[in-house]
Image (cartoon, rainbow, N blue to C red; front, side, top):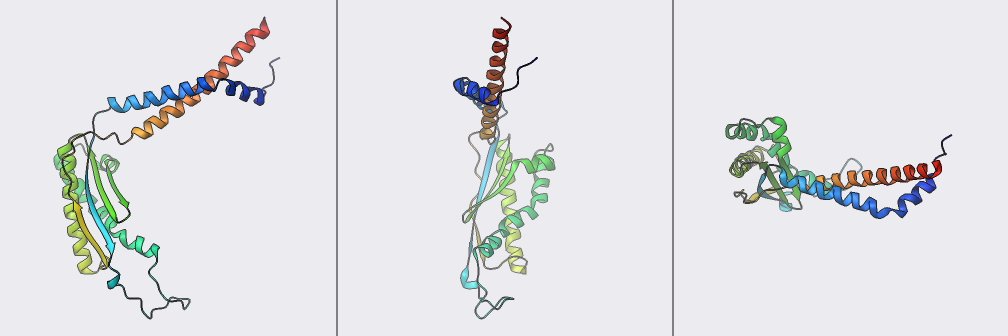
Amino acid sequence: MRDAFDPVAAFNHLLRRWWKIVMFASIGGLLGLGFTFIQPPVYQAEATFHASIDFTEINFEGLVGEYGHPVVFTQYDEDLALQVVERVLLAKRPDAQAFARTLDPSIDYHSFMRNKQIQRYLARWHLRYRHKDPAIAQAIVNYWSDIGMEALREAQASGDAESFVYISQVTEATLPQSATYYNRNTLVLAGTLIGFLVGILWVDFRGRYFNHLVKER
């Protein structure tokens, strides 16, 4: 008859051999890190936009809401207005992808979406694209930013976008000089977690195996 599993004893056994588990986790993390260096190099180009609210163009004086309270421009309203940058850039995404395919026919919808990034940090928006050819990454970002800025101006002039949002392009994309390991942290974390789990299973298996041998003797 097999012995009943004792979770307390099993936990104490793992705790006494914590250094082995840490060793496996460290090895897993190093393997994940090493894997990032054997991947094909990827280059990331970036253009930067600045977006801010011109509050002199907003006049809520005398306006009240549905509950009779004065209408105010909240932080939520500000964030929503600044999202116009992302909305317009995404609206021009099919044109940017079509241009990208003229440079590299292998770029399809899924690879384009996987390698593009539109990210806001405070008042700045960052448009990024990754590609194995740094010149292609640069060309895609600059084309996309150019048609994006043109579309933003047209939308504001026609009233389809908030006219009180002031938008300017701060930087164009320069030619990337070094490869970007954009998933390095993910691979290191994954390797560490896998190593941690393997360490727990190994320590637990070894403990059970030797305990079984001792009892048989």
